Amino acid sequence: MSLGFLSKGHGRTWRSIDVWLKKLTKGLLGGGAPKAKGESGALKDVGDAIVASVECDRCGERIEVRLRKSSDIPRGTEDDPFEFFVQKTVVGTKCFNRIDLRLEMDARYRLIRCDAKGGRLVSP
Ligand SMILES: [Zn+2]
View (cartoon, rainbow, N blue to C red):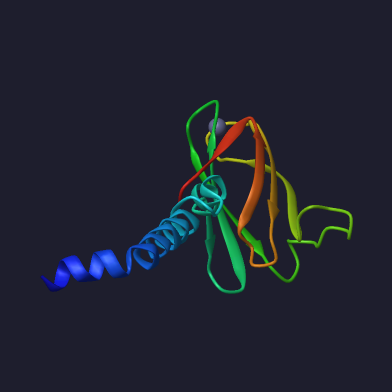
């Protein structure tokens, strides 16, 4: 049968395609940075600004922090592993708990690392 002829004559080729496909799928699914992918969802890009949502540790209040790209988000220095960063103290309206928020982002404002003392970053 033609199928038998195909697998016999082109066995090596098919195997290498199979390996290539596996490499490709692996690269697409696992090769990226799954951690960063999840974290970047915590920031919302609204054009001229980035909106971060934080939740207060003390009262659970959800606070939206709007950060203008032009004025609120400075660039890091050449030695920093990130492009932009934000260092901000956030205080909600329900209590006086202070949340020390620090966000580190890449050139496209995707979150690389975040740290929130007194609260936590949540998805918008
Ligand atoms: Zn609070």
